[in-house]
Each structure stands twice: as structure tokens, then as C-alpha cells.
Amino acid sequence: MTNDEFWESYETLAHTEHSYEKYNSLIDLFSWTMENEQPYEEFAVRFELLNCANLLGEFEILFEHFFWCLDFFQHNEKHLQEWTSSILWAFKWTLERIVLFPHVDKETIEELFSDFQELLTKHQFSSRPFYQFRHKASLLEGDFQSAEEYYGLWVNAPRDDLADCAACELQAEMEYLFQINRTDEALHIAERLLNREVTCGEIPHLTYSKLLLPYLRLGKTAEAQYFQSEGYFMIYQKPNLLVEASEHLLFFALTNPKGGKKIFERHIDSADADKNPYGMFSFYLASLVWGKALKKNGLRVPFSLQEMESAVLAIADDFDERNGNQHFYEKMRETVELLETVAGANQ
Image (cartoon, rainbow, N blue to C red; front, side, top):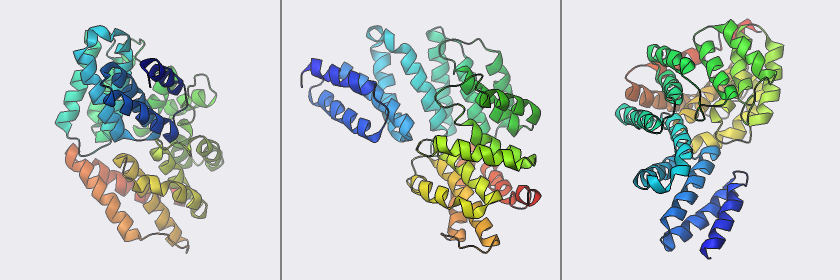
């Protein structure tokens, strides 16, 4: 393959929908860059690999290629100015994903956020995405005081080309407002998203699953059932959306346990693959509640409840040890208790 043939193949793949077939073709190009010692071509194909890996839920592959690309960019910045925004967007993806891995310690996470903010300042971008993703990381860690502080900084910082689109930002706001029980405000945002006042490639796809539990709590079971049907169709083939699949399984656990069988069977292999510890925690936890609901209704449970509970607890312990609190343990306890609260209220 000549250099011109490489770039022709690269451009074709760059405009192809992400899939494992595309990923394997990119690996072939990556091998060529290594064999022929073409560092700039290697940078380009690694960047497309990390982009593909992110959408396929292969987050550790994303990290591997991103950190190589970041290092190469910083050592060759004057020749790669046109890649600045792309590198910073990939940094956002990395920050959002890396907190999902409990073996990544808090010191490393803090250093990465600091490096990201320095790059934003260096290249004269707003700190808005730094505040937004620091807010999201604080929420995941169970640090609600920091989450509130970063939320205020995020929504008041100026927007620029590195800010998430309006739909994604509203989605993130809605999720936070539900968590802190500002339900009316969250529902107002949900209405805007469902009416497609603003939309993007992932919104309102991600919106539906976040409305299932709030609507059940409000006693709006029929609306929640519609959201489940409409929303699951949009996400069930996306391997990076295991958390959202978990929310659909939890919905069935609380409303119609028998109906959750296909969701469990479709996604359990993805959870077992351990490519996303937070997604695995979420799906195992939903599966545990679903299994308990099956048992409660005299139906067969397709796994050991004791083993599933032990698996959920082990992941919760890993996150809580990293975060220095009991947030994941409490989340596990509260989710299991939903069987007696939300489910009972809607029977």
C-alpha cells in the first residue's frame, strides 16, 4: 500500500458508520503505519480508532489510543494545529469514561482534569466543558456538594465550540435535577427534549430511560410504559449504552418482571465482558432487582441471586474504596428497596 492509498482508505473509513468491521479495517491501517514507521499517519488512524472504540463501548481501547495521541500532539503541536479541537473533544470523552473504572485512583483523575483545564486555557477555550464533566464525575463519586458547585460554574460559563450541544447539556441538567429532587424543573426540560426542541445523535434516545423511574414514582405508569417501548428501540443495539439498558430492565422489574427476560438475555453478555465497570454494576444491580421480582412472583430466576448480589457488592466496594465513601453501597441498597416502594405503589 502506498501513502496515497493509505489516505484514500483512511478517508473512506473515517466517513463510515462505527462498527467492529470498521474497527478491524482501521487495525489493518494501523499495522501498516507501524510497519512503515509513519508517525503522522499513525496519529490519524489512532484517533479514528479511539473515536470508534468510544462508540462501541470499548473504553480501555479508547484510553490506550487517546493517551498516545495526546502525547504525540503535545510533542508535535506546531504541525497539528488543525487537530486541537479534536484532541480536546477526545479528552472530554476520556474524562467521562475513565471515572467509570474504579481501579483508576482519584489522584490520577484529578491530574487528568487539571491537564484538561490547562489545555483549554492554553488554547483559549472556555472552561465550560471542564466544569460540566467535573460536575458529572462528582455525581458519580457521590460528592454532591462538589457537584452543586461545578453545576453553577458550568451553566454560567460561556459557550464555545468545545461545549456539548444544547440537547446533550439539557439532558445532563435534567438527570441532575431529578437526582436532587427538583422534579418540576427536570420534567420541564424532559418535555423540551421529547418535543425535539433541541436534538442530536443521542438525544432524545438517552432521555427515555431517565424518565422511567421518575414517572413511576409520580404514578404515571402508562406514560412510563410508552417511554420504555419508544426508548429501548433506540438504544438496544448500542453497546456503549449498558447503563440505559439497565434502566429499562429495572423498569420491568418494578412493573412486569416477566417482560424483562429479553432485555436481560440481550445485554448480560455485554455486562459479563467487564468492559465498563460502572455499566456492569448498573446492569447487575438491575438484574438483581429483576431476579428478586421474579422470585417474589413465583417465576424462575435464571441465575443465582446470591452470586449476583455478591457480584454487585464487590463492584460497589471497589468504587466506594476509590471514592472514600459508601455511595455505591447506598445506591445498591436503595435500588433493591424500590421493589417495596415504587413497585408497591403502582400495583
